[in-house]
Length: 448
Figure: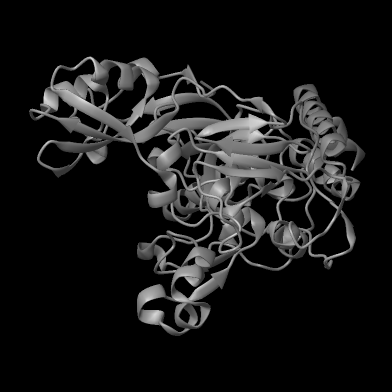
């Protein structure tokens, strides 16, 4: 034993010390000191090697000029080499994806023109503090379901489930931050019809039909918080704020929140002559957004800058903004309000520790918060103290965004992270070599 320790090279002790210090710093951040029991195994892996972690290397064939290895088996050595590399990569990816950062691709036009469909984001989980996973036993890089070619089954094991806990970060979501979060209404999902969400489907079709019509809606499944779909929106309301939308303009605590440059709204455009495809390309309207309702009547989402350019076109007769009372659909809380997407609120955004009196006027607003997110109960006439902070998230593509106006508050335990920069941007409407990669967007800050 002593001779074995004595023969360990000094550099191995240095490596063991560095890794041990890094591991202890991680435990200090994590706050779970039970994991210190793994420290002797880390030291052993670099020094004493009582546990034969690399036992499979005994099958390594001898290199040219080396003595023959009687145990050599090229096939076994190759197989276990691959297994070792894959296991190490999966563990590393799982750790990085869980605590540091992850990749996220913009799937929809909710944040156009701030973030574009086809943008790939580097999302920092450490900014707001990474969450300790609710479902620790899950396959890395798969949110909740394996692809069909791998069986289409759940990619996680529901038990054990850990309570919500977030490690210390250096910031919290603030107004105008773009935030990645788990979809709050994604706790219950129809497997064959996931958009709109389960609650909206029940509102339109009735809960009985949604549960009974498996051919249309599929199975009804539930998902833990960290296994729900990832959404990305802009934070426009923080805990403790009172939010109101008047004629599409957001007001926070009575003061106007100026629109970001990329915010756009839907308009009906009446023209005396057709608008050419090349003109619409220069204007920045994607193929998916080009709607010709009838001869001389278009429907486009436009930013202020795009609107100003279009108004100068001599072919344009009139431009009319889309009316949310007509086209917006029901908003949160479903069936309980006369608000619409363009004129909404006022609504108070809960803050941890705040107490409010539940009344007939506000109980329907906070019922889901109390029962679903905080797993508590309360009744009209009770004072209720909130256990978490909540946020209000909206898309910059205001008339084409399924956001807090439709499904309500985002609890703090649903917050995933903050996009830092765009590392790749693909324009699907253009071929390779002709603008398919948006080079000017590469490594641009995501919070524009």
